[in-house]
Image (cartoon, rainbow over all chains, first blue to last red):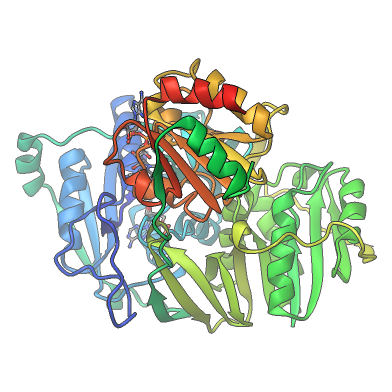
Length: 249
Length: 309
Ligand SMILES: Cc1cc2nc3c(=O)[nH]c(=O)nc-3n(C[C@H](O)[C@H](O)[C@H](O)COP(=O)(O)OP(=O)(O)OC[C@H]3O[C@@H](n4cnc5c(N)ncnc54)[C@H](O)[C@@H]3O)c2cc1C
Ligand SMILES: Nc1ncnc2c1ncn2[C@@H]1O[C@H](COP(=O)(O)O)[C@@H](O)[C@H]1O
């Protein structure tokens, strides 16, 4: 089975996002970018499936501008076999990304697609579900455990109430939660090897898809900060303040 | 304008989060209809009809809808979408799972996790773990929306008298089946609706040490929460995680114990009314958002707090 792993290039999670002064968006100029953490979990799971013999080939795919190549190279260094870069400088919404990924999935004849649960820039948490819908495939989101056997996958999902287990028919689209696995570190020889692995480029415009955005961002604001608090010197002072000043206990 | 709100429930009770989504629908304006999809969920439909401000409740009762499987439920939502300008659900794992699927089938965008209704087509939503707020305007004929519960009051659960309409529907797409759910400890105060939350982080060192927090929580009628590190270390189950990828809460009082205050954790609790931090590292970023900070060893401070209450 061939598996497609969808990866996104995002602002490094350790970096605090800064809103541009003109309110047009978040300032990404010179910011440190990485592979979306959840996408690393998605790729790690595919690598483990290949090691277990369930998966024969892993293709990483990403939609984005020129620098997206770095993120795909990272995926190749982690161990993916091939990369596909769908090139566009536009920032597409999840629905449009899902349409692109659908076409790639069909062209590649993949039997499984694994995405991250959410991209930590837009925090949309939509693309997996949309791709699954457009393909008409089974959907298993927020996975913390996956077992594939005999044309079906048993997936444990992280839900608000705890853990839910479902069974889905293959082919399926899944999304990885952070506790699905611990992504491996990339070693220098892997980085060198990754340079020689194939990377296909597809111009978005050549795909013939309607990828127009449906939402217009009117402005992006900084949230209101909290007023500075105080340091108390003892537990008794804390309890006194909570009782008499804040009146919350 | 007509709003359809998808009711989240377990075939017995309506999830509180749904009441917050109803309020968002009220702010959008127009009629509000509810969709109750489930199995043997007549009681839920009757309770839904009592919610203030609701005009009608549509009920689809079928075994294929018993567990909110995305493929089956999204199919039903699409069938029922005709005539609605807005389709809403709360931004819980239930809503996040099904709504984007329905939106894609309708070929419209989904607007995730709205924090404010500006007008019928314009909404504010947090991005980058809440470090930025985007105001977005939709050009779609149908707006599919998930609602950030902490930003909208709960609608009154009583006082309405909506009509109840049985609708057909509920075809099994045959793609997935529900196996089981490991349910949380029912004795605990619900994290998302608690007025007071006591959360522990990696500094707690073990699951056993959380008994200290439970004892404080019991005295305050509080729920217990956790950071991701505490969940990953196996101290507590995943449903206690607060943050960008866990639950987003805004209690009157949030007590963070042994939590450093990473961006991703702050995303889930920084709108709490009063924040207390107990941490032995005076440089910990949690102190930047805390109203009351106590620089102390939690293994001394927490038992002391427990006996002071
Ligand atoms: C994509 C992504 C999503 C994430 N989502 C979330 C999320 O939803 N929620 C979340 O919480 N995190 C999330 N994280 C993880 C987050 O970045 C932090 O790693 C995590 O919040 C750290 O947890 P912590 O504060 O418990 O642990 P640490 O950062 O290790 O902090 C432990 C703290 O305990 C203090 N301490 C230790 N011993 C004592 C003592 N005896 N007395 C008092 N204080 C003590 C230390 O001084 C320290 O400040 C996410 C990360 C990523 C990359
Ligand atoms: N531009 C993109 N290219 C490839 N995959 C993407 C892209 N955007 C989102 N995805 C995938 O969809 C997941 C969820 O993203 P989102 O719906 O934006 O939260 C990500 O973790 C990726 O796996």
